[in-house]
Length: 92
Image (cartoon, rainbow, N blue to C red; front, side):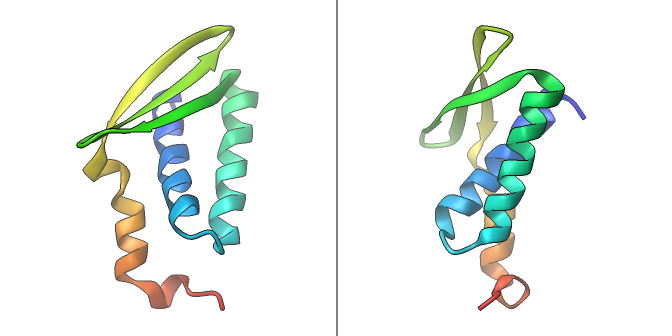
């Protein structure tokens, strides 16, 4: 998996964790991907900025800061799917 793909997965999980504070599975998954970013790519997410039609994910890799841009519609796909299928993700 590439750094770009891993950042995209992290962003999707971050969006779910932000929208569903009680969702421990989303938090655990996001922590796993965070650890993967660190161990595999020596990268750490520093900031997420929301814009009208995109997300900017700023990260530091090997001491250099960079930003990847993700389309809002694509980044929010997992959250939309979960919201449209709550019976699959309601752990209460």
